[in-house]
Figure: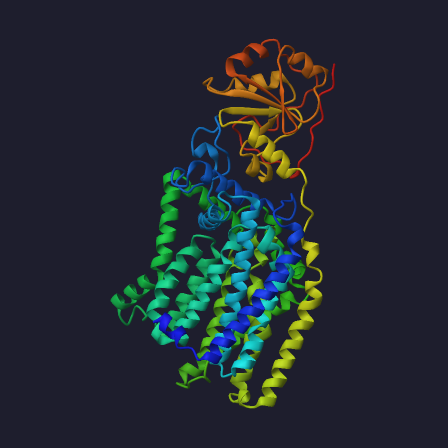
Length: 590
């Protein structure tokens, strides 16, 4: 069993694991400190709308209960102008697993989802990914025949690169969404697969843990579909799953055992979408992301130039594209060599098969996903994050050691060769990572000072039965930064007449109209609100009227000359393409 296998480790092997763990934790602590100036704060820039999106979904679950909402990811808040789940515009591009884990952690750590709790969970993911990469590398290097000291030294390289690469530093703190959340179960699944191959007695336990990890990963992001596909090919190639032409029953049963966790997760997701009537929307989004529509077609056409020419170098240095393709080429070459050996019934050197499959599981799914979803990868630079795993583990350690073992099977028996190879690989890794790491701050935008105070002020001032307007600002659906904190839409309206025309569309009068002002009333608003009284709350001047009172107040209201139209009526989706908070100009007094 898995527990017995680990308990029977040689004390020196256990000491090597602890040394590697201590080094990784210490380096992780440094990176947490280095990222501290940007922790717990949102910016309107560099895709931090994804963190705000996760916060919006998680806060809705916290306020209303995930079961009550059928675990739906809702773009619009609980409010009188959004009476049904469908009117709240469910987000359907991904299963809700990435929100579920962050939501659970937030409940335990802070009692409710916050920006800080999401970033803390993101950091924990990063640290655990680094630990798992180190453990995976140590296991593979030991199976390749390296002694404990050399294995531990070289196994420290992948977690070092993973923790210091600028892209990983940024995305694994300030941006939390599906692309970030999937990488921890991704690495854990590969680690469990390696343990399963290295310790035959651990297979039963590993199978159960892999089923849970597969369900977790597939509930987060579609990258895991590619990993499961490559892992399934591996099981077929190694005979763990017999081919269907040899025994249909055995093939079906082994395949079902392998994929049971993933099938359960995806089945629940599709049942959820069917309940919400959102399967057609998922199909539309899928066609967009593979580049089969005209949406962002110019980006899709320039995928290679954008992804490999801009995104990867910006996050992993100028050598990033070359290192990624070296990893892929190495996997293909070694895979072809391994296939040739199998045809000739020749056994590979000790540990080579384990290393080749480990590198393939780390590398091939990443390439499959970005090329299958070219549109998604071209318009989102966070889609490059997964290649931090490839760059950290494959070209700098696993690939050169594996190639050397294939070419010179007993090279590791010579102490001088071990020292020389280790010195070369460590020097190359440090020469790559140190200058790249020093530029990590360029990826971090400055936090916006308005998001938290304004969002919290609105949240404290209004209720779900209010329809909220302001002539000074708006809180749109997207970008979701303010909405995630406020939990309430605020519609820009230039005049009382515009508000009256808007709310007249609502069939019932079970609502209140709220006006929020960030600036003093001008002559127009003083005239319209004459005889009423507002209150100051958290820097906002607030007027609240029930529907009947507002109807009487609005009887004398007339549109102002040259007043702009409302960007969105109450209850309508609104995407503010400018993407930043700003004050709207007041309509001049006639």
